[in-house]
Each structure stands twice: as C-alpha cells, then as structure tokens.
Image (cartoon, rainbow, N blue to C red; front, top):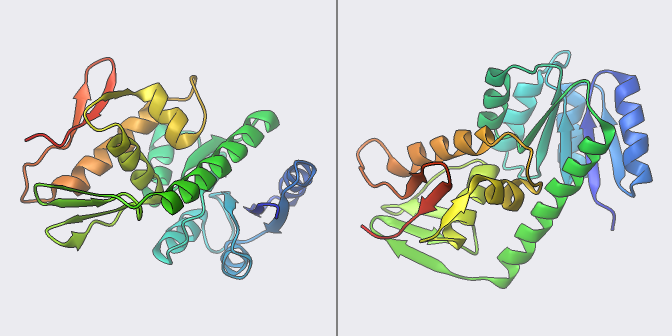
Length: 233
C-alpha cells in the first residue's frame, strides 16, 4: 500500500503542483487549504507524513502542529514555510516538527527529505517489532521496544524526533556518535544538513532527562566530534 501524504498549504498552486509530483513518486496525496481542514483530514485519513505550511488562514500551522502532537499523532511532520529565521526553525522543532524546509524550495531536495522521513519511520516500526529490551540505570528505565523512558516510574514526555534521537544514542551507548551519523540515522539524510538541528534536540533531551531536582548527566558533548550517552556513573 502506498504511503499517504497530507499537504496543508493555503496556496493552491503550490499544493497542487507538489501533490502532482508526489503522486508521480507513487504516493497517495491529500491536500487541505486551511488548518481546520488539515486537522480534519489528519484524523480521518491517518497520513504517514504531513507537509505543513505555517502561515495558514484561520488556524495557524503552529496550532495545527501542536494539536497533532497533543492528540498523539506521531506521523513525521515536514514544515514548508517562507519563514527562514533560525528562531522560526527552533520554534518548529520544539513544537514537534521532524524537518523544516524554507520557501522557495528545490523539488528534488524536498522529495529526498520526504523519502528519508518515511524511510526512518518505517525502520523505526520494524525495529520496534523485532526488539524487546529494557535498560535500567540509576532512576531511569529505557524501554527500547516502546521508545519510552521513565524516571522514578513516571514516563517522560518527548516529541517523536527527540525519542528517535535519544534511542539512536542508546543504541550506541558508550560510544561517541558524530553529528553527521546522527543526522543520517535519525533524519535520514547525510552530510550538508545544518548540524545545529542536533544541538537543539540534544538541549531539549538534557532538560527533560535531568528534571529540576536531578544532576544526572546521561548525554555528554565530545568537543568537535559529537555526543556520547553513557550508563556509567
């Protein structure tokens, strides 16, 4: 069955052209012109990936993304926006986006990122189906099969990409992992992508893992190389 992609874009010409190219690639595509219609389609059609504009009439793209994540929708979300400032990208990632592409965009690059996001989602589903492992350390329990973490018995709430990044580090526990490798394993594309994407997500992971009262540091920065997750005290 073909993967289903939902495009939420108020510029009909952009949405139609992109949908046509994605259909040529073999995807099933739905297009919504407003945030309200996008939310309705996300519920009724259960897309495998969402391409989301931020500047929508009525319900904004930020509200759409926040609502999707709060409702438990874990499908990858690729933001497609004319907003190109770093603060806009950081805000998008913090809301739960998996990738961010600015307008005007190159079609081939966008298609590559769509394929990469869907591939990573499929690999994650396959890995979850074949593994059932728990790692207990200090106050934490890492449920590898379910991509869940608890601290003192309470599950930590994380965005989908934060979970993917954390468990990529768990898989390489005790070994330093470069930013390029993490970008390839978690985001699905190789060199040339801004590695600050990793830094933003690492900062959020550290904040959520540490809590207000704990001094436990699981993720260490290895200068000029990457990151190391260690289960050693």
